[in-house]
Image (cartoon, rainbow, N blue to C red; front, side, top):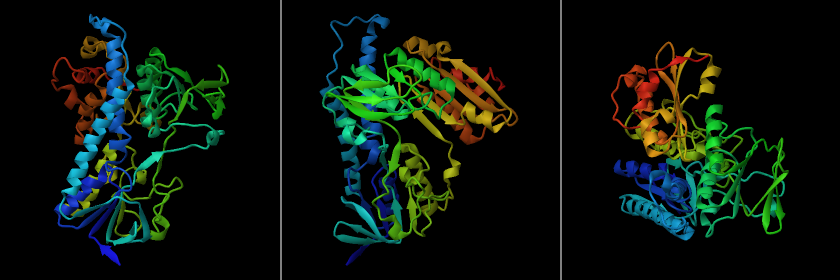
Length: 459
């Protein structure tokens, strides 16, 4: 015997619950299936817990710098890691519980806490039950990738998920992977008092960014006492007494780094391997991501894939936008597409990086005539007044159309200030729209028009 629904949603990450809300409001009877925790990666092991810990790390860093602001503290700054963890967990629980209350109160929505597996294109096994629907939405997210490193089966290691279960601070955390997740944790734990070494296979950090951004990030983190081993072409793991040893092959330095804990931060993989996608004849690529078109439809009629599992984005904001695209097409007769969105992301070290559109490297590679403007944060009054003047801002403009091509702001408030440029890009307005705007003083955003007034040819 099977239970019939109008719509089935597999996964309760960022796209799933909001889609359930729209579908039930439209009169559909919906089954929402989640095998683990409601809220997915962002709420439970991603944005919410890590940014809560970043905030605690920032408070510790600011306390240590109190004298720079004329503030005298008696005694040493002490990190109560259990209190940090308790604060984080309370924020996560509040978010997850609020989501569950919303879903449980949603008319015509049934929540299943179990694993889902396709029996055929429109049959899903959930525990001992079989659910059927003409519409199925896959929103199963992803998890940290575990690379096949020599010695990995013989040494305990952490991922961005399991690290959150730590009860005590690592004495020396070795982070394998010098990109967004790895650097966020590296700075965080350094500010908590751990020794930190980052091991990166490439010759520079955050390889998707421009080299000047990478160099500035390296300088910022080195100044806080984080050590780096770049160009580590042959990474391996081994035991070293009670410690972990990470083997590297670099141009200089010791051949291995010994530490108390190792964090593997080397990408993510989609949670698609146990869904029975082959039973539904749903196509995936060589990495396990579900292949979708510009409106997130799979190759099978009536099945969509949203969020991290479709390879179209790896962020909360792209997952939520996936929900908006699907709902607009299904319910609003509004033909929205993935290709409508401008690529945006952030690196949440302190100061943060906000990056939108094309990088300078990509603009140069395109060969189009372009203009560039750069301003160091030392010439941004707001940053100087806050004592946080590290970094710089950069914008690129098409020399012929005067449309903004992209921008990077590495500096205090950069993850927020960059949105004024982004909105202009979505409006397809010329850069002079911002250049002639009057922004509030003193802010970081007010220097964006000034920077645009200094544009020069990109040579």
